[in-house]
Image (cartoon, rainbow, N blue to C red; front, side):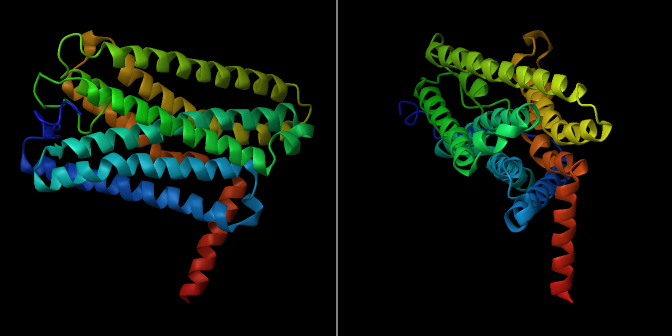
Length: 311
């Protein structure tokens, strides 16, 4: 691409200037990363190994955990290494790969969350058709569509972003490579093509958001009409974790990309980026396991089995 001859590396935003704070960030993010690996790994193992969890909702949850592992593994190991070795540099190719993979995992996760909203809608509003509408083949096709759409989006945006000529340095005001920060380095009027693509993407993402909202309007109407209090409680227990994950994902991402420029600053951008890129993959397993008794039982069984093998 045209930028390769002039830029060989980018300089990422440092978390701190002093060595003590850099080491503090190293241990903090290492702890978050290990927690994300453990939490998502346990969910993947429990769903894969426990036949009671071989249902559409848990199949999609397994895919969500895989995407969470992918997204946090794309950006956090590099940030951890930079804090440990007091380094800010990332190669041009490394930046391109990081942006592509992160955009791929995040886009696919959003599409998958939309599919999971449809799963909850069918389970609660059309329970008699659940086996027909969400059979094994249909679930695989919907999950594959989420992964495939995320991949196509990532390739398209990465190609467009890195085809834009950059003439305003190589310093990024972020701790990982993301599209808005790279476009800030573009020559005047050179980023219009990517901005148009971003506008189209925002419109498409808004359409998915409307679908999720309408699904939950129908879900809550159906739940409130249930005569049994136990039935309402069970329905809410299966919906609230997904709703919490969607709310966390969207609120942090929307604030990160649509906040007014007047309140923007490198420090605030850094905090918000951590909130939408690092926190959700780490807390999603906790959110899903807190109110889901079947998942709790599967995890308990998994731990008991491991302890039995150790003895």
